[in-house]
Length: 252
Figure 1 (cartoon, helix red, strand yellow):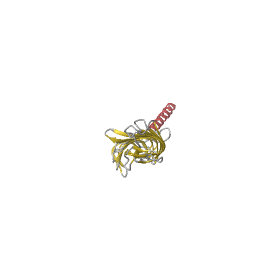
Figure 2 (cartoon, helix red, strand yellow):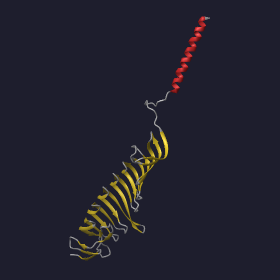
Figure 3 (cartoon, helix red, strand yellow):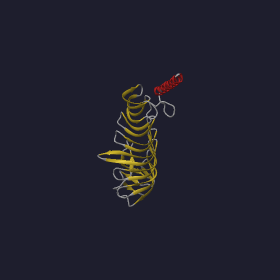
Figure 4 (cartoon, one colour):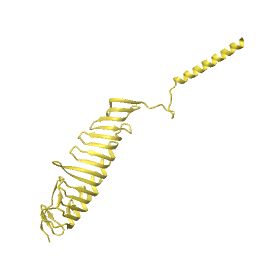
């Protein structure tokens, strides 16, 4: 009888120990496979971060990761990959109405992107530190539905290198650019079929040759004004040819 009692006591003690052990396990926080607690992901609305802006979106451990921030001078919608910096992929609209889409680093477009300017211009291509740099396409409105466009090399928001410029009147140029305009070796084509191949300086031909017919006074040369407007060229070429308002009036 005594042996049975001792056996029962031992079983009871073992059962209580097992129960306490199991109870202790259920009360502990379950870590992830790396031994760290899981991040806290929350959705917030109009949360104000002093010195940064007002944020609506998703935070991880209290830091914005995706959503919209409205700050002084701009609104950004996209991802946040470096805390409270505008580093990620998204769309930024500044107070002037320019809309920039692409990949940002510290608030500046880097890599391939698009900028739709408030004045109607459009830039699509490669960017560095917020400026067009590399290969890019750019459009300038010229009024009444007309526009000029350029595709080619850019350096620091300036046309430098090889490029193609299409004028809204049908004329076009392919060749070298420097100082943000037609400078260097290239060919300019007029709508009537005439063309000039040679060296250009500030948009005007300097040395070279005509092609595809005679200059009959209908076609002319190009020049660029300080205001960026297109106009006919007036002046004397290095070969002695005199041009007035796009018309050849004297040729030696």
